[in-house]
Length: 188
Image (tube, rainbow, N blue to C red; front, side, top):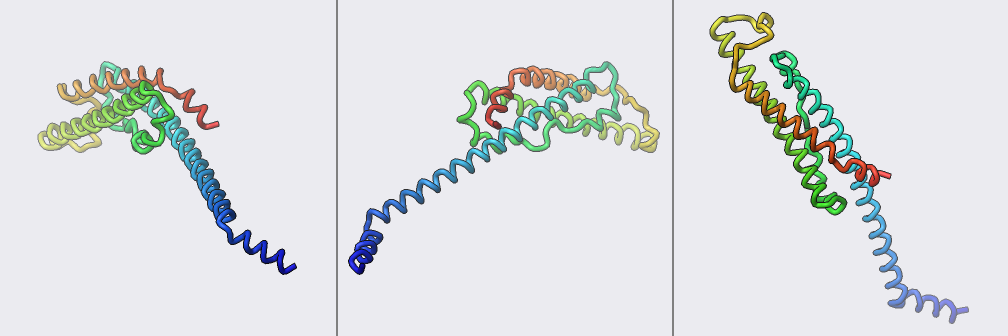
C-alpha cells in the first residue's frame, strides 16, 4: 500500500502531470477569450445595425425638412442630430476582419455623411439663431415668441439647406448598399 501511495505521489509531482495541467489551463483560457471576443463582436454588430437603421430614419426626416421650397424654421430648429455617438469608430478595429474592403469603405462613407450632416445641422442652427438675434432682437427688439416663421432671405442658410439635402441623398443612396444582411448573420 505504501508503495502505491509513493508511486502516486511521484507521478503527480512529475513534469508530465504539470504539463498536462498547464496545457489544460491554457486551453480553457483560450476558449474563454474566444467566447468573450465572439460576444463582444456580436454586441458591436447589433449596436451598429440599430444605429445604422436609426441614422437612416434621421436622414429621411431631415431630408423631408430641407427638400421643401420654403423654410420651416421652427421644424428645422427641432431637427435632431443624425448620429449622437459614432459606434463604428468604437468598434471598427474589432470588426475589420468580418467585412471586405469595399464594405468597410461603404460603412466609413455612411458614417462620414452622418458626421457631415450633423455639422451642417449645427451650422444651420447657429445661422438661424444668429440671424434672429442680430436682425430681430437687436434691431427691432421683438420678443422671441412673436418672431415670424420665416426669415428674411439668408444666402448662407440656403447653402446649408442645399448641402444638407445633398448629404442626405448621398447617405440614403449609400444605405441601400450597406451589408446589413451580412451583419444579421453574425448575430445568430
